[in-house]
Length: 101
Image 1 (cartoon, rainbow, N blue to C red):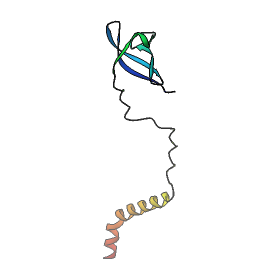
Image 2 (cartoon, rainbow, N blue to C red; image 1 turned 180 degrees about the vertical axis):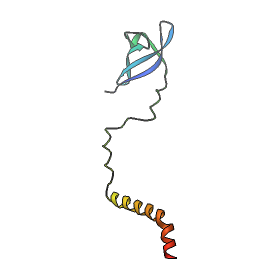
Image 3 (cartoon, helix red, strand yellow; image 1 turned 135 degrees about the vertical axis):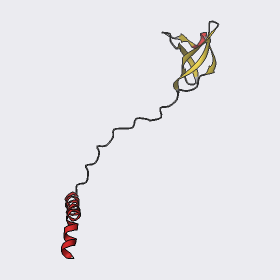
């Protein structure tokens, strides 16, 4: 059996109101008017028009996120030594050039 809940405009006691309609096997079995407590049997009201479905969220929450990978540390000393050499060359390039002349 197909049990579902939809939102419809419903005519009840000469008034048209939005309601939450419970269906069983495609047949309405009960109404719960939005903003009111309790429900009424489906035989005492009439369906007028189905309300549009609410918009789906743009960003859907996904399952548990995997832990972020550890940063790769391989070669970090090589970078450190390379930067130190570049600083040394930049600082000493003038006097070294003068010595070589």
